[in-house]
Structures are given as structure tokens and as C-alpha cells.
Amino acid sequence: MVAAHVESAQDPGAALAAIRILGADTFAPVVLAGAPLHPEDAAAIALAFSALPPGRDVPLPPPAGPEGPWLMAWRDWGTVTLLTVLTGRGGARLTAPRPALPADAAPADDAAGWAEWSVRMGQLSTLALPGLDGPVHDAARRSPLALARGATRAVLRRDYPTAARIARWLAWLRSDGVRLPLDAGPLVEHIGLLAGGDRPALDTAISRRLIAL
Amino acid sequence: MLSQTVRPREITLDHHALTMAMAEPEAPFSDAPVYAPEAAGVLLLLALLSPREPKEPKDL
Amino acid sequence: MAMPATEAAHRIASQALTWLHTQREHGALPPDTTAELAEPDSVYKPLGETALAASLVLREGVAGSAELRLARELLDFCWKQLGGGAMLHERLLRYPMMTDPLETYAHFARCDYRHEALDRLLAHTTSLRSARAAEVLPNRRLAVANAARIGGFDQGGLATDWAALSRATWLGACPEPWLIDWMTAYCMTHTVFHLTDWGRLPSGLPGDVAQYLTRWLPAWIDIWAEIGEWDLVAELLIVSNCLAEPRRDPVAWERLAGIQHEDGLMPRDGRPVGDDPAERFAAHHHTTVVAAVAGTLAVSRALGARS
Image (tube, rainbow over all chains, first blue to last red; front, side, top):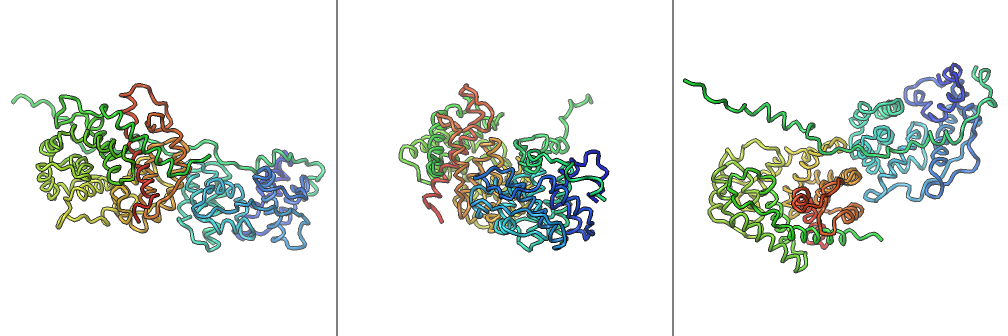
């Protein structure tokens, strides 16, 4: 599917960059809708990684290090981990080291910083997929209220792309059996209807599937 | 086959651009709800419910 | 260095009260005012709101003696403007279905200012089915019910079904917190004010409503503070202090303290504030009242004035 896109693209580099950015979500149809994994798609991912391999040294978490490289490292880790899960040991020999989390990994229910934290989690929403788990997911499990507040805040600010990403964590938590302080279904539908653009549409589609699990 | 179409060494990905595209910060400015009388519906409701001002009585 | 929330709240309340006292003549009724009150919102309403603030300062009793004196003088001033209650009585005689005489009177009755003829008339009007069944928004129905409660007009057969009135409100439904607009936010804050009699009875909030507010107040305070809706933010802070377990919200208090004017005026929003005193009063009196109430209740709850 994505392989065909790269092959037919005028600018294969841009197509591969898009795949790198899409990351683990490239496999959303596989892990959420039972679509088969095509070896060529796995190869496309591998190609996107070989063109710019993740560094061996893991970027420091903010505020110790800049946000950009740390986010990219987490996303790459998600992509590579999911690819490995899906293809097994015989798959692409890609590696992406797992970064650390900041010290304030999850705000307690009434702690300050829930807004910034929820936005940060939204930036890592591509990790909210079946087949991935780890410290980020544990942070989500510990703070459903902070995520719910973050999604509420984003919707009211009319920042629908951010809302779609944070709501995705709520959908993931629901699929993980965590009790939520609000109903994720109507929230996801609301964002999906009011948001424009492909990225929120994709996040919404994934959220719907997660809720249905 | 993809590997026949595109050779790894032909592709260079811009690290900076990639990092920026992956960052996805929140919207810098809020569009939160403010007073919007046009959205209240109260005025319309009053217009529908209230009778019009009585006209001057016609000559009998 | 960040000011602790309680200190900020105290400063805000004290300065707001001072401003209300200094500027009180702007709230005086024009000399030829009759009970008809052609412009009730711009003249009569501010008097009632000032009385609200002053009466709550006296009720809570956590202010210093100088501030208590200011509050007492303010309440006396407002009562005198209303003819010691005579104007409210006249207004109710002329418009027996209007609720503002009762709602305004309540702030004086709270501090034992009574008008005998008004008491008799209110005892009658509040007992009539027509008055009770008049079509009003649910939070307004609660306003009237609380005013009747304060004045003692809800005895015996006139007892209020608080649970039913509460369920009829937006807040009572504990709805999706992400679908709220500006007007609904004010309906919600006023629902809390009246259910708890301005923080006197935190138990007036049903348990599910209290939990709901605890969950979502931080999000609402955040978004409206971000765009400088200070009036609404201050009302949300009152709500915080109407809960059985009051919230602290130090960041919000600090922001309000930062934008309050030297003379104690609290701006309604982020737009420029004029220099003309009459204009300042007209535009920002309400918000300064809200700030005085918010700060007073915050200090009171911080001191553990009630469980």
C-alpha cells in the first residue's frame, strides 16, 4: 500500500519522509482492521529509516534536551518496535533506541502541568496502537484525568488536531480497560466532525477502531 | 519491487525538516468561546413569542 | 516569587472592596428615579451587586476591621438608595411577578436589614402558584429559590425541591465538559452560587455535581484565563470555593492579582480600560464585585471557616 505510493511518487524522497512521519500509524490497518502486512510496506519503512537512521545515542528528554529530537526518537522507536512485532525476528534489522521520560512523567490528578503534559502526550499519540506498550503507555494509564482535561482544553481552544491526538490516548486507554472520567466515543465523533485535514481524520479513524476493540 | 525502484543512497531525508514535521505543537492561539449574542438564540425566541406593538385603533 | 493563593485572594478582595466603596456614588440612583426604573440593568442592578459583595464580606467575617467597616458603610449606602427597602416594595406592588425585588432584598436580609411591608408582600407573592410557575431559565429559578431561602420565604408548604431544580440545570446533567459556551458557563456558575448560597452550603451541591466540577474546573479556568476573560475566571474561582473540598488554583489567583488595577478595579476582560470614572464603573463594576466575592470566599475557605 505505502510501497505503491513510493513507487509511483514523483518525489520518492518526499514519499519516504511522509512514511517516516506517519511511523507506526502505517501499520494501523494491520493492527486495527486485520489487514495483511505486505512485505513491501515493511521494506518501504526500512528504506525510510536507512536514508536517515536514528542516532545510537538517545536524545535527552525535555527540559534537559530539545523537544524535537526526543519526540522523533520516541516515534521512531514506536515504528521500529511495531514493525518488529509484526514481522518477527526475520524482519528488517532496524533498531531505534527507546528514550527516557522526563522526571514529571505523569501529573497527579490535581497537579499543575497537566495542560503541557497532555499536549506532549498528543505529540506521542502515534504510540497509541495495539502492539505497543511501555513507559509512555504507563504514564497514560496513571493520568486519565489529565488526558481528559487536555482533550477538553484542546476542543474548547478549537485546536482540533491536538484534540484528536489527545483523544486518541483516551481511546487507547479505553481499549486497555482503564476507566475514564468522560465518554470517549462522543468526544472522538465530535472532533472528527469539526476537524479538517487528513491527520485529524486519521487519528479519529484510529480512535474509533480503538474504542471498538 | 520497491528496492528496484528506489536505491537507498539516492534518498536524503532532511533531518531538520523531519524533526519539525514530527513535532506537531499545539495551536499557538486559542479560539475559546466568548460572548456571542448571535449564538444565544434568546433574541430570536423573544421575537417569535412577543406580539407586535399594537397599532393605533381604527376609526369605528 | 509567586504569591501564595490565599494572600493574592486577600489582596484582591480588599482592594476590590475599597474600589467599590470609593466609587459608590456612581451607583447612586438618579434623583427622579421611580419604581418603574427604566434602565434597571445600568442602575438598579449594580446597587444589588454591591450589596451582595458587602453582605458576603460581613457574613464571612474574615476581613479586618477596616474592611468590615467599609462593607457596613456600603450596605448602608445601598439600603439608603433603595429607601430602606421602600423602593423594592413599590416595585413589587407595581410588578408583582418581578423577582428582582426579592433577589435584591435577600442581600440585605442576609444582614438583618428588613422592611416590614415588603416582608408581608413577599410572603404573599412567593406563595402564589403563578409566581412559582413563571417561565424562567433553571438557574434563574434557583436564584429566586435561594433568595426566598435567605429571606425566610420558603417555610412549610413553600419548601424548595432543590434536587428537582438542580436536575433541570445544565450543570445538573453533568454533561460533556468539552461542549460549553460562554453563556452556559455563566448559567453553570450561577447554578453553583444559588445551590450553595454563595459558598455557605457546599453540601447544597449533589455529590456527582461536586465531583464533576472538581474534574473540569481546571480546564475551564485554563482556557478562559488564556484569553483574558477575567470576569468569568473570577466566577469560576468562586465556584472552586463553593465545593466541599475547595480548590486552590494558585496560577489563576496570581494572574488576577496581576491585572487588578492600583485603585482596586478588576477589568472584565483583556480590552483597554478607559480613564473616565463613570465609564470605568459602568464597564467594570460587575467584575470588581465578583473579585471581592471571590477573594473573600477563598480566604474564608482557606481559614477553614466551614467543613
